[in-house]
Image (cartoon, rainbow, N blue to C red; front, side, top):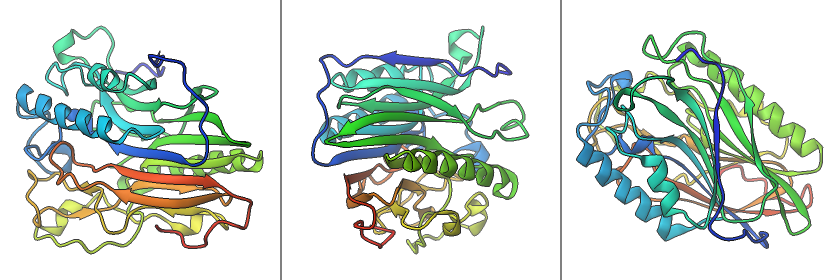
Length: 325
């Protein structure tokens, strides 16, 4: 668990991928390793569970996740907390099942948490997945700052982003999959990570590309007031996204009407758990947000809900000035 390397896994699509045209449809979804559905809480959030209550619960969640992915079929899926069979998934191969559900997509998986030489039932293989059903120039990883302390005292997370380059019409794009820290004291590591990610995004924009950065930011992306009755202490990890860090013309794409995450100090009950929006996309000034829609799954399958965003490249200065869709 102290190994600093980040292994990657690439899987080709079942058929040759065709170039994208018109708009780019992107889904971002933290699937919580198929273990954080409505029946689960989580110890690090103030709950009691270290892993899901049963294998049957993981399989139920995975079936629901797979159905949603098959139903929507975006051009690109930016997935966080994808995991192979092991301790967190109670032996269920979430990674393999998700890829099987997305046979028409290429997959790039990279581990942010993993064990070496641990037997299967107690092994960990957990990380980011970028799935594409459009032709692309490949995906790579870029490291970002790590937490100074181990999560829960023993888990070292190798933070990084996945960067995919592709062409849409006459425009070159860079699409970045991100998952920032959640339990860092005072959001100090998160801020370091955020600045590193935004610097990376700006470098691609400065080179003439349209840029979309999507994922689980672990920061409240827009003010929300969804009803809840749970104690406010469960919100200890939540910090607001610092809008002043965005440059002129950069926009945040979220659906303000639909929460994307719930707190995990207890199992999910509608109207009880605190919910807010931490999942979405940040796009460069030469990108128009055509639409942004959160999917209402009632947190049945994971503690996050997917966000679907449609994007289009535009001339700089032509994109709408409204930051939240």
